[in-house]
Length: 52
Image (cartoon, rainbow, N blue to C red; front, side, top):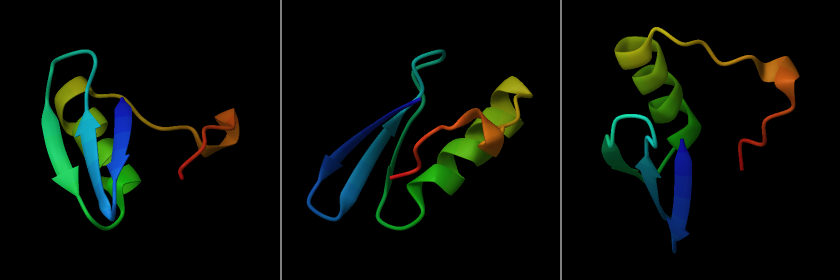
């Protein structure tokens, strides 16, 4: 998942399937929902991933 910042907007892009979404608030939550729904993947917060 790639997150690009432009002002207060975030552009989320899934590098696996090409899914795109803009998010102003909680972009990590939108990304997590996509991964769970479309790729049956879970996010492990202990892995040290940065949510900023």
